[in-house]
Length: 93
Image 1 (cartoon, one colour):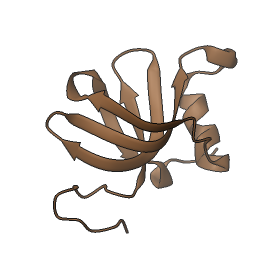
Image 2 (cartoon, one colour; image 1 turned 45 degrees about the vertical axis):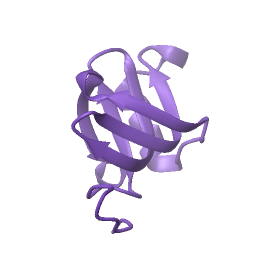
Image 3 (cartoon, helix red, strand yellow; image 1 turned 135 degrees about the vertical axis):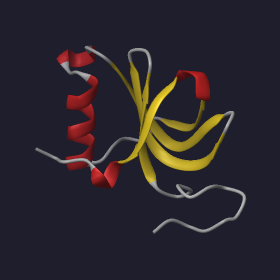
Image 4 (cartoon, one colour; image 1 turned 120 degrees about the vertical axis):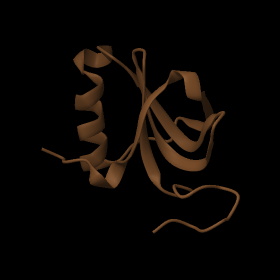
C-alpha cells in the first residue's frame, strides 16, 4: 500500500510505469497524479528501440530487476500519457 496523503492521489508512493503515445516509457515513484498529468520521482525513461529493446521488454526487465533513478523528478502531461500501471503487477517473464 502507498503512503496516504489526501491531496496526492491513490498511487502516491507506488512505483508505476507510464507509457506514452510516443516512443517513451517512464518508470518511477508516483508523487502526484491529477488531470494535468503525473509527477514521478526517482524515475528512468526508455525510448523504443534503444539498446535493441522494445518498451515492453524494458518494462519486463525493470519489473524483474528494478530501475535506475536517472531523473530526480519528471512531469508527464496528460496529453502524452497512454497508460499508467503499477510496476508490481507486471509479469517478469
